[in-house]
Length: 153
Image (cartoon, rainbow, N blue to C red; front, side, top):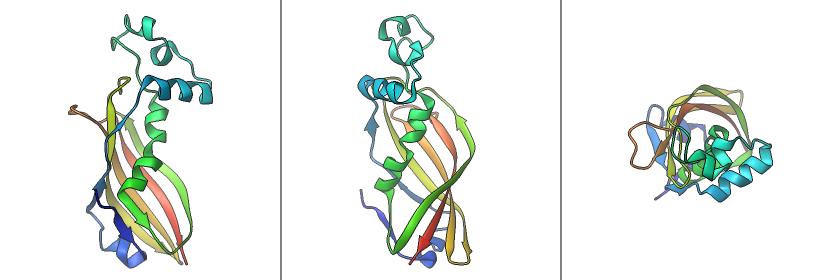
């Protein structure tokens, strides 16, 4: 997959309303779920207890919702390369909805669309509508709007 390369506000603006790209699939194994549980101190059984989870509503463990969200920067890097930057800041998240649980071992990917863009005295504010999709599933795991501030040189 080829990354979209952005070098300026004008480059970004030329993609307004367009799908910017789709990342590769990324499997989320139980080991990653367990490491996330350790990092966040969230050891709820539905995520980490494989035996108990067999009797739960999904028949197995599921990925933490916030682990799914935390994959966004990694997947975003596969879609876009922004050059000539002093810095990029994660500014916020809006309209986030967890649509469907990701089961341990399933794969996810990111699809992103440039929803809006503004030049604020040299800082570019880009609102990216995103969906984290689950392989072979109709409903996405997570949707929302991520806002990034790009400070170009």
